[in-house]
Image 1 (tube, rainbow, N blue to C red):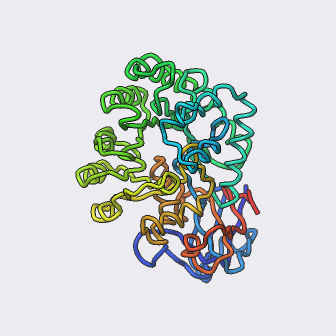
Image 2 (image 1 turned 60 degrees about the vertical axis):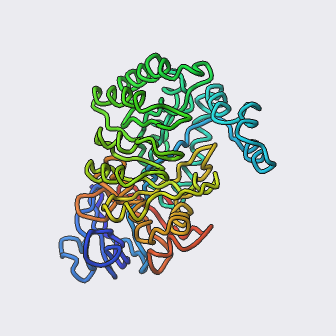
Image 3 (image 1 turned 90 degrees about the vertical axis):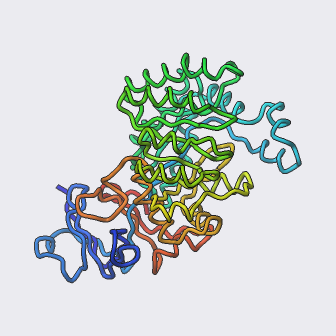
Amino acid sequence: MSKRVFIDAKLATLAEGGRPYGLIDHGAVAVEDGLICWVGAESALPSTFQSWDKVDCGGRVMTPGLVDCHTHVVFGGNRAREFEMRLEGATYEEIARAGGGIVSTVMATRSATDAELLEQALTRVDALRAEGVTTIEIKSGYGLDIETEHRMLRTARRIAGLRPVRVKTSFLGAHAIPPEFKGLSSVYIDEVCIPALRAAHAEGLVDAVDGFMEGIAFSGDEITRVFKAARELGLPVKLHAEQLSNLGGAKLAASFGALSADHLEYLDEAGVSAMKEAGTVAVILPGAFYFLREKQSPPIALFRKHEVPMAIATDCNPGSSPLASLLLTMNMSATLFRLTPEECLRGATQHAARALGLDDCGTIDVGKRADLALWNIAHPNELSYRIGFNPLYQSYFSGELCHQ
């Protein structure tokens, strides 16, 4: 059995109530077999733990391992040329006619081998891990046919076996309309998306079901059919909602008890209220807002007013958020949307875990997984303050050192 005690740490436990960040100066954390079994001031450490192996944290800040709860890290190719074309003045329509847009990523993903998809995804996952990320959500959605959607999900599952990171998968067959079904979105949902979901679930590849409800994607009726199929399979749902317009996506997601609704720039108070009632987490994605140069910000004040928990995530994807830094995401959340540094840290830990339906991580508390990050900083507010600076000293996955 593995038994160790972390000593002389400034603990940002993120426990509710009490001190900001749940701070404990000169704290200690006892870990047995990958789980936290005691947390508190080192001076109060029970004698039971005195003989255990010690890890001296040297007064560094310790937080829960970070959680990136919305990513698309498995895909083929990139869209750097498309980015360049936009800067040269090309319109979305011109880029699409030149073979750009999501269609280009779909074609690149379909043509990539399994080995290529895995190799490219691991580089992004490793970048996240190097910043203290210990749990990551990975979506499908760039295959848009049964075979490639399944290959993406299998690749995501393989990552968890090759790296010390926890992976939760989301089936995103309702991401976009593939070129072969142009003008036939409803047919695509019934003939490809839902059958692909059922088959992927039967293979054990799916932890949750996602969709994109927007004028350029799928209607409320089409998303409802996907969510009903998810409910029949006993799978939780989440939704890309209100990114470009207010079509009532968050309200629809809440009616299905969704884990989260994500983006939310155009969300109104009725949608926020519905999310609060359903316990649905708001996932804020500043990377896409920044990269697309959007102007409409998500309703942060309404989330606070209705006490809707806010998670933050990279939305790492090739088209609208080629971002593989959760630390930069925290800074963006603060500078672009005015989240406080504590809200940013909770958004990348406690609330991000909740957005994935996880109650065994995201805070430093007894009974939780010992997924921990140790930082060369004096206070946790530095994690949102710095830009392009990674102060990670060590991270631990189930109590075992996984990055230094």
